[in-house]
Image (spheres, rainbow, N blue to C red):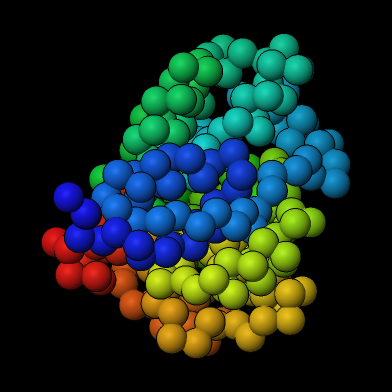
Length: 258
């Protein structure tokens, strides 16, 4: 028996190392995932600031971990530098996402806060009253939105923002995108603001107009939706829960399958 969503071609823009989770769920529901990774995780221009922060974790009251990419980057550096985060007395960790939090605990970080709302706003809601006068470490991508550090500083925190990695566009992305669009796309999923900006860059390199006319954009959360709007693309649907299941549910709702 054919599935109700069979044949719907959905563009998946996650990095090559992260596409499987979303693509597998889409296939199980009858969608046809079309993988065009527009993000590639590469080292920062320099590890100096990150290494200095990690070797002096006792300077900080809080470590803010916003993504699995950040966690992997700092965990790799801790291992290389022989830093055991469990020995940083007084350091508490706030993590966005339950999976990220569990992985952080497995690396020895003492995770204190995991907001139910898995976006920066949810983290701010929980942290705002707890960071006044405290020093925070926020490792992240080299080019990222300043929503979180600005709001933490407004709450009275002293925030050190350090580069943990960079998001680069894979060389093959423009040609893969051109081929995907030639065959037709029924929707595009966006899992981060970076996926929006990098897809726009790939489209420009491919000579393709962005946004894609007549193609619905499905957003994982409000910050990603804001970035879509800044790029002239009104989201057709936004996940009510900012994770992969929430994104898939928003996609299903858009096509009337829920």
